[in-house]
Amino acid sequence: MRFSSRNFLTVTLAVAFFCAGWIGRAKYDAHRRKLRYNQALDRLNADLTFSESRHVPFRIGSVISVDDHHFHCDIGFDDGVRVEDVLSVYRGDTWLGQARVVETEVDRSNCVPIGFKAIPGDLAKLWAVN
Image 1: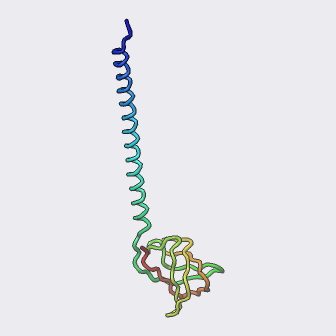
Image 2 (image 1 turned 30 degrees about the horizontal axis):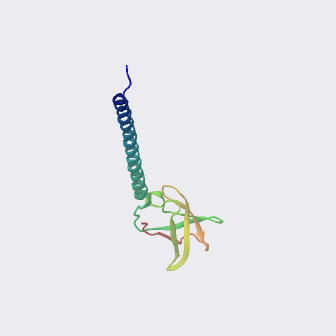
Image 3 (image 1 turned 90 degrees about the vertical axis):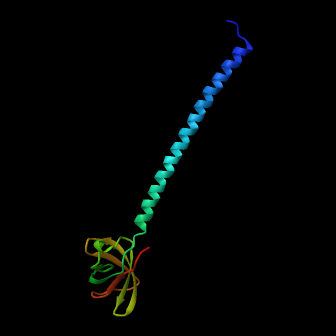
């Protein structure tokens, strides 16, 4: 078989179309993977946004016991209290300060007061969280 410029051109075009098809398919697959990744990321962000933007109605509880650096409040997980929430604590009409929730149970929470000493009977209020 004689090798001519026409054969060379035919082989060259065949290889070019094959490579172009392969490269095009690789680009298409990369695009689809990126699209699936972005969709998964959007779902994850939507889930995070939903879980972080819980709307808790206003809750009032009372301090039931006091330890050295903690106090226990009678509002808990079933009332919408979560770890790292901040409660406002009052004695009568006087605001004492804020307390951070460090542990929750179904019907009570363990809190750390920030800059004050709580006594049993103080009111703890959980405001709506956005």
